[in-house]
Image 1 (tube, rainbow, N blue to C red):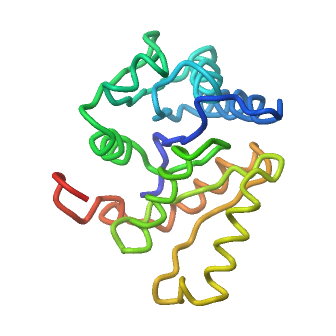
Image 2 (image 1 turned 90 degrees about the horizontal axis):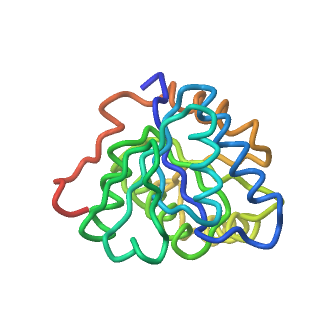
Length: 200
């Protein structure tokens, strides 16, 4: 896989207290659109998700929202010039997002964002895929998690045999170059989930 056509971006349905988070979401959305890279995201129209998708659309890009039916009233999915996929449950949502993206970026977010990106790390650790995964460490947001992962490695709960590589970018401008560089080393076969589609 030498080219990234679409990125899955995990981020909060809230904006957080630091204005830098929303600014980063807006800037990254603009970057995606300007580079012709599709956005795959959680489908909401509020918080960082809303800021990200709005920036993509306002700059002529394409966004695919993927949201489970039970969240459609809470997160108010967008119904603008983008594709909206309503899934039966979270499992189907995550599978769809995986299949439509060439890599994964985690902007600041809450437990849902954390769960989604950690699941991608888990699948990568278990050898299910090698799509690049990146933490957008805006204003040091992911520092506590990165410290925890380093702690896990130090205490050998993540030994070399189970090592999973991920990327970290402190600046929005560095995200896409790092993802593109990482994608160059991934073969097409390694982008496919190596398990039956019914259950991961």
